[in-house]
Image (cartoon, rainbow, N blue to C red; front, top):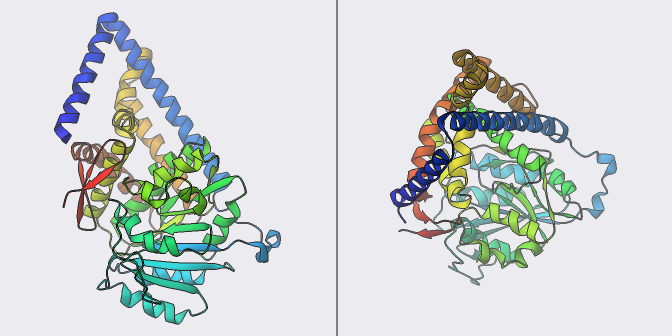
Length: 428
């Protein structure tokens, strides 16, 4: 179904629903209802701000005490690193995983082809750290012993899982940390995640954030991930709703194996979301690590940020279609306009004064949220924050509309068609 067709279906259905509501109520009742709903949504989002700020303050950056750790009893962990191409910061990011403060782990690095320039970065690192158990897999080869088992095996449309399959099969440990190539780990990242993997927990994930970098686009990313995204993420974690990022998550391999393996997840574009679901289905809990995951891409621009937001919108709509209605009305601009009218209609408040107060309040709450996630001095000024925050809020409706109208997504030079239920298929 094309983007225009399903949009027409959604639009016509909405029209029929509104016509029915209109027939049942007179104009004043409709306006009163819409205004009341607006205020209810507004209060819910204020509550969301409060929950995320409190939860973030109480949970984030709470490292375990070294005196409570029995190092000999810590379980082994397999770290899977899918790589495609070379990012300017790849060497720096990858090297952080060779210097983790953890007694027993292996690093399995997975590449798609032997000509990938990342090979020239990976192999010297493996030689530099011979005491770290590490292996390189290329096109389902084990580059250490050149075995051909599973060479060129495709398990589905998801390119990341295809890339990981050989390393996944070779994993020695039941705990699997899947970590993207652009992640910069602190020394205690793995220790903190394992300490949160208590007996009833099946997956430990990290709040997405960014390293301190220079430039407006980098500031924009930090403001987004430390503000709007952190509010959504922390609130969902606090109320125990499925919320798992694929950037960095530690999962029990047995959970994946008992639910169809990576093959069962490979038909989905958002495999992380479904990893979270199968964890809950298996009777385990999800747990948020206390340390955010630090993205450290060496390529940052406004164009890349916009493309990423559009792609994420497409994925969210495909996976959870109700976002089509819920997300736009919770954005600060739309919410402010709606409730400026609502409070004016019901209580006679000045709409302009309300809107300005609303924007100022939302911006302040976003700044407080950002400072909690950062847990340190920000590397940009308050003026830079205001500009980045306003840019993101003003651009979001446009980016959401673009994402809503597209049914194909491009990732790593490959185009995929998204289908309802989060499934994908290759276009070319």
